[in-house]
Image (spheres, rainbow over the protein chains, first blue to last red):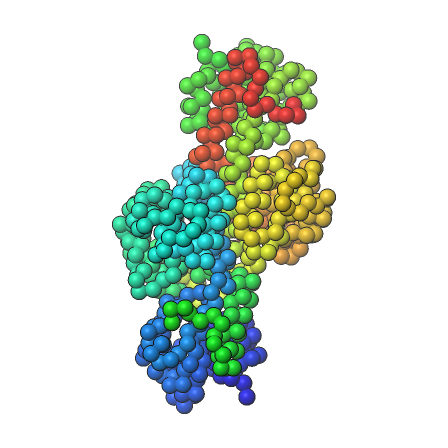
Length: 317
Length: 317
């Protein structure tokens, strides 16, 4: 009989089909597990697959008395209460690095689309305004990439790939992270100092309780009127209300966002703004990134059911 | 008395104000010079500033019997009949490299925006479709940058900057140009071979009579159903009708365009397509690129009026 895996978050059916070849899936479709399956069924669950951002605390874990492994799809595991898992002897694993290039690339895409105003440009051509020689204040020349100060917040695998890409664009790269690394980029000891220095802040930090609303009104103000913020980490890192205010009153010039505080909802006050480029959390959403993340999930689950250590266990768990 | 410079193309007033500090400008505003100025005034013109793509043949040159210098704003000089200029002893100069990074960056912006479908993504969030969990066939995962085959057509300063940026995205870069260079990219002896190999064709070739419609239906077909074409060179390089057909019947997946056959007009059959990202010829349109191009113009004009060789003369002229 195939090993059973509870699917705790909502995932595309095509992806589940692949896992169903190896495991018997109890798919909640993102609904509360207790509403979809009987206590008896939940009682037999030993492993689950979840999205790292989906809240998964002690109370939820206690619905599954035999739970031994929480496997996150993707890099993040910020929704998982790691202490609660550790105290219950539940291993937590993820897909580190599998989507790093894909996420770094969406960060670059959002930065370029925002600073070069590609949405406005596209509309200017499509509408016929260009052909009619109509003036467009949004199409005034902007600073380009050479010499631009790009601040990378967080220097994990994604941050490093963002930094390498920005360097190829002849930009200057600075970063702030908990640790200073042996990297050819200027280190700033505080996020404030990085924000003062840079004109684009790329948020690539691993999200958690300690990064909640760290990018607040003060940090945004430090970016300045020609400043941009790009977030591909988690929506929780930015104070979204402060961001709406800073974008609306031109405290900063624009933003590129792949993540939001309450996904899949982006507030109306944000989505009406012309100086933002939005993406629906598609950072890791490329063919090769999905293949790599699925390989990590399969490796984690297979090892667990064979009684072996999880190959991609969360280090702090 | 200030030296006189005829302004042959239409340029922004703010830019002309800067040149007017040094020269007396006869600004046609892009209209035929003979309609704006008297034959007497034109007869005294020794230097002109033009956009490289503006047609400027023997007949037009003969309106200015004393013309000694044609200075192009930007890299291109494809509108200028170089033989006609040479036979009249008219020097032709441009702004080589001044906008190379800015143009390479719009090529990258268009490629990323097109392959990651950022227009669709933005609209998916803004419309509320994401929040409503509506399916969007355009949001299916696509191939990302790592390992992607990027074909660069033309290996001048812009092509090299595109190649360096693509390499930082972990893509494989190949190129076709008249000459093979000592560069760490695979050389293809024909455009056909490059198109067979790559999934994104970046057109960065210097345009001219010999590149007219070189990217035709056959080349587009070779890119394949997952293929993209990005053009930041000149509209004339692509057969625009063949491109409309290839995009409409899904012979290729998409396109990113900064240039068109008849600017500022992009055909309606093109601008209705959802799988294209448009920009209104803003490749060189960044603050630092304008500053660098204006410095070249001033250096060329100043040298000419001082009787010195033009520092940025067109080599083949």
